[in-house]
Amino acid sequence: MSPPRCGAAFELQDVWGMLASRLLLPRKLTFAPGSRGETLFRMSRRSSSRSPKAGVPKVECLFHEPTRTATYLVSCPETMETAIIDSALDFDLASGQTTTKHIERTVERVKEAKLKVKYVMETHMHADHLTGAQQLKKQLGGRVVIGHKVKIVQKTFKKIYNTPDVADDGSQFDLLVKEGDSLPLGNLKISVLETPGHTPACVSYVIGDAVFTGDALFMHDSGCGRCDFPNGSATDLYNSIQKLMKLPDATRVFVAHDYGAGGKRDFAWESTVELEKKNNPYIVGMDKEKFVKKRQERDATLSAPNLLLPSIQVNMRAGHLPPAESNGTRYLKTPLSGDGHI
Image (cartoon, rainbow, N blue to C red; front, side, top):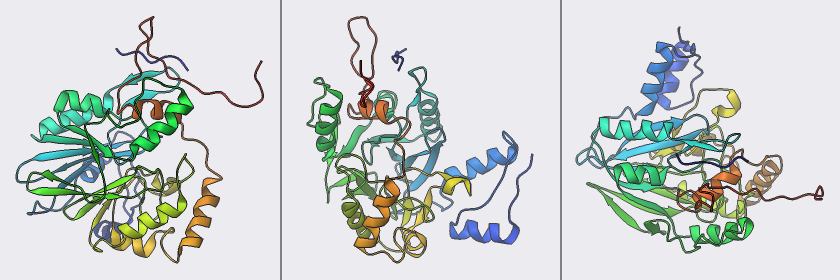
């Protein structure tokens, strides 16, 4: 891997489309690339359609299509205090180049909406995209937040990548949170639920009538996150999903990633607890034994995420790039395995 250096028209299925939009069900829409229809659709999907109400956060999604990551701006409508959840830094694997297109888009939107960033939050240490937490903190302020069990993940990958410069105490982050913690966000509060399984450090954030589930739960037609990463556990994930399903049925569910149900629909990121209970293939008709079997069988068919190696090395540093070596260049490591050694 090369070292990274710093430096038309649209169609609706008529009546069904209208009903689906009201019920938050995925809609089958097609747009001419770059068309006005596509632009308006993207804009309409960025924000919750609900009018601001006391105790209800305003949620806006900035979807990072290259990594299928949903970055959220979650704000108190009275004070404009904001949490940014699951940011993304652009990275080209072939060239090793980082760019800040998604970061710039996020910063622009925060300034345009006159939001006041208080937290830059991670639902977990992602393995499929690089976090943009440090760039956002530098430009917008706020404290970088993650679950306290990130220390377990750091300890694991510190050995795999042989990175003695990485402390495994979570000190790269500004705030480590655990089950039951509550953080103020203007007139709202952020309640922390530990939802391990995808990783041991996963947390979900409950803010007013909304929950941000990371990879613990996906859209109601798509299931949940994989559990085959080091220290992942399908049993833990089953328990975490059951915990999430105890939230009120009307709770809005915001997921960290969406893949368009394998290309069957456009990208979506908002569901509800009720829709998950009634439709999610990893919830409907599942007990713990069936869930674990289904999840493990599915995981056995999955390839490693495209950005696994660079993501882990940056994200375990809370978004800091690895330190420059004596030639002034920063490097990411690729552990080798197999029988082809000379």
